[in-house]
Length: 219
Image 1 (cartoon, helix red, strand yellow):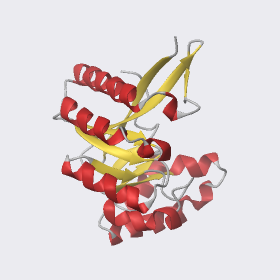
Image 2: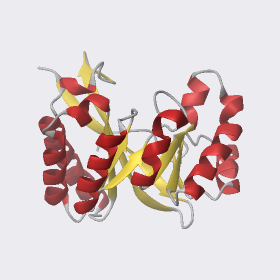
Image 3: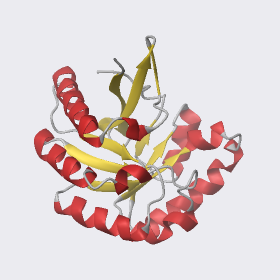
Image 4: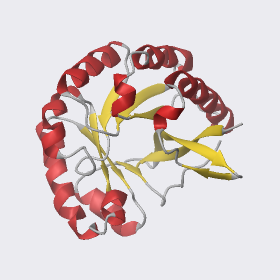
């Protein structure tokens, strides 16, 4: 039987060096090795939310904290699933007082973003655009959605993996300006060393995530 689990990675608030929250990352086991699923829709949103609820309980037990923020990723296909919103809202109620944030990993049509934003905000769930500037989340694809989200996330590792690490300062500067323009919070991901910390500090980005603070791990 195929096994799935959520690995968690901390997000650190460098303003006071506290744990801001955790991103949960779905992994699949094959022959004793955990890896990314080929298709994140291969596990239904219902099963994912139940698995996430178990992960939150384990995290609370291991940390002694029940007031953390949990970030959960949704791709384009998952946002089109009519059961997704109901499952997410039900999950939020089951894990309270833990805060829940939804990260959009792929560009979503504006009408869908508006609907998601309205329903999630009615239930005190934050909405984030992940990986801004890379993949399908280019500026042209997400610019109209910016007024409807709470936060944007800039992933430095995406530039490094594509061989364009030299573009990080330029793109980061651009997205910091967008965050300021739309009064959005910002997260920087892929923080690996003190140089990355200095870059984040230069732009006043307190919420940071990356291997420097911890690799994704089971709880």
